[in-house]
Amino acid sequence: MRHTRCAAVDVHYPDAGGAKAALVLAAGPAFAEITGEHVARLDEAEPYRPGAFYLRELPAMRAVLRRAGPVDLLVVDGYVHLDPDGRPGLGAHAHEEFGVPVIGVAKTAFRTATHAIPVLRGKAVRPLHVTAIGLAPDEAARIVRTMAGPHRLPDALRRVDRLSRE
Image (tube, rainbow, N blue to C red):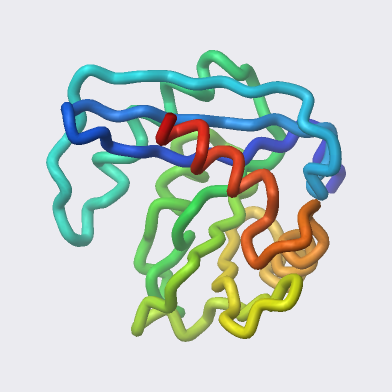
């Protein structure tokens, strides 16, 4: 499958309330050249509920994806599935909502996510934890490994994190 319109997305929750989602677009999964940036703010956000994180994230993701238009691949900060039995995480809910392949890139290990593929980038000694839906896990790990940027976290994910916090 060719991914020609790829997006990385992140959501931040300002102290003043609400949510702010940021999304960067690229013409390919390496995110070598960013072709667009979008930000959406919501005045209200669901409270954090363990096991239901997606209820808090999806409205902001929905808002920023409306601005960006259709995508072929979505990269999220978090897990697709929370365990090898398929308990859905943010990425699985995003896949169901938006109907595109989703790669989850988590910075910290989740104890039940034993199926996540560890990916080392740059000079990092701590791996990223990669999960996927709509594409093979090994392909997702390869994509994350080859995404633009010299650091542990790919440049596209660093950029959306920064945009969502500004």
